[in-house]
Length: 491
Image (tube, rainbow, N blue to C red; front, side):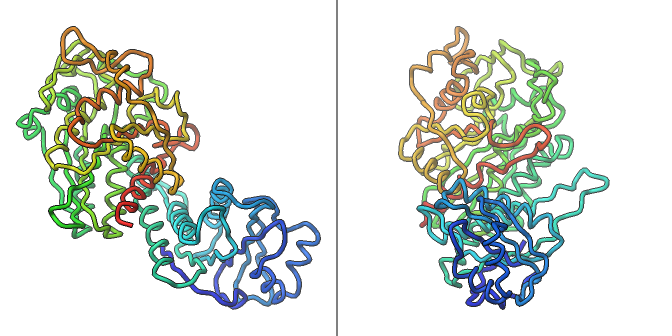
């Protein structure tokens, strides 16, 4: 998908397969009046009859309109009230959904007719560019007869051709491509994307970007590092674990990096604490934290952001077998802390605690881990907000603010010492679960014990990383939040 900023002084002369005109329910704007005059009063007649799309996101396609250079005119309603972010998202979703269905290869959107309360033109261009890329996503890997791919391959955003506007559109497109990468990795079945396969994807990403370097650690290296918690997760599978280290160098070596840590469980059966069969197929999505790290690093590398970022991915399968870890086993983490495994289905925190210890060697400015960690998070927040925990208020607030800007929202969660006692164990330094109460919080409290030496945040994306049900599919979240957070650091 190509995104272009195109200055258009006269919309009637825009030669495009489809010209998109936002129309307000309160009256015609400048572009509507110019187009109406060119097509002999057609739009005024439709408005007088009440046939124009009045509600936000309503659409009307005029397949042929005389007097215009455009082949088609697609009208999209902006409503009768000031357009807020929620209404804008509804409009954009409806618009690009329709463009995807049309048999056209290009469209031109008159962005000057869009006014979002509290947001300026660059924000609008970023979100439009991202939406255009998201609609181009097309999964085909495991289909013998794939559905036809959308033909839309070029979107022109009519706006002043300035550095600010080009940068805004480029950022939206890069974030969209990063989200699509995360979606694709999430949607791949577990037999197509093993820990080794995930490592190969990281290597391919690094090969495509000069500023990215990658290192893959095998299980022998993990044993030498003392990653006993991570190795306890992978003990029951025939697929070997992989620990992926990606380094993006966008600034001087003296700049402390932002470290992103992704949970990469390519399939989670629960291990000996076997999950119920219903919806177990969705456990291929237990690597969406890892996918979001790769998607974010792709966006960062494409935009050539002037900062340093390290991506760490602990990739493993969690399977039951005669060699699998058992409830009551005690393992020693890389940090030297012993952990009593009370539930082998609480495996993500075992991967992450060793990865968080490893992150300390980079002397990071901040560490953010991303994980589909707990079903309790879904109970607490549903599928709308990512849970945000942090041991430093400024870091947590920066992530929340980035999520608001990007429309990839999070919600602050408590990280109080009151919850830590639930992790007490009679036989180890701590247990890997804290009981049924506050499960998402106690999981975060577990991780906090391994992130005491730096500023750290934990994103529980169990409710936001994929859509369940008949429209099952990865969402690409929280690539937008993470990318915006990193962009904000350099702006």
